Amino acid sequence: MSKTLAAVLALAVGVAPAAALAESSPARDALKRACTGDYMELCSAYSPGGPEVEACFRANMKNLSSDCASAITAYKREQKSTRRVSEAR
Image (cartoon, rainbow, N blue to C red; front, side, top):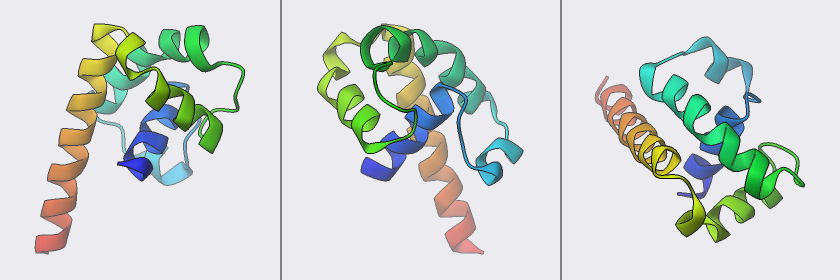
C-alpha cells in the first residue's frame, strides 16, 4: 500500500514520473481532480510525492473528502487490475 499511496499522492498534485504521466486513465484523472484540494488543505507543507506527504495523507485518511477517498479506492483497484494483466503476459 505504501508505494500505491505514494503514487496516488504524486498524481493527486500533478507530480509524477514520466511513465505515469504517459499513461492517463479515467481513475488517474479523477484522482488528480478529487485529491488536489485535500493535499492543499491537509498536507501542502510537504513536498508532493515524498515520504512526508505520504505519511500526512495516511494520518489524515479519516479527514479526506469523500470524493478523494473514493478516487483513491478506484485508482488502487485500477492499479491492482493492471498489475494482474501485465503479470499474466
